[in-house]
Length: 93
Image (cartoon, rainbow, N blue to C red; front, side, top):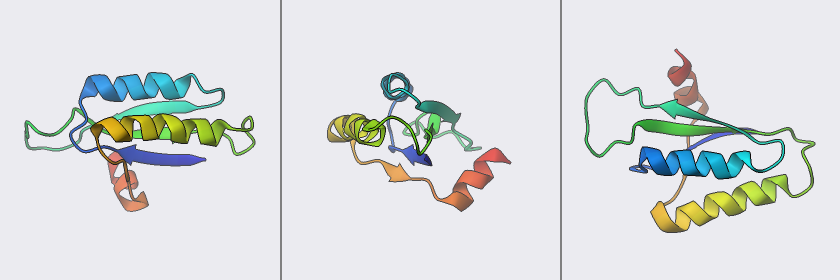
């Protein structure tokens, strides 16, 4: 499973906290993708999105645990948005 999520306005420290919690789930790998905007905007986080990866054959309950962790932060900081594949590709360029 591979996907990218962002929570608009989420501070860098909270992104790091989310990543640390997700990495505690066996088989989960998380990468923080830096903001790529060319213009400064105080309301933007330094992080654009989280890339979350784990094998489809990961331990039972891995996906459920990832969803629980994301839901915890969503309840406190706002909804997660999926980063579209075309947007994801532009981040790599």
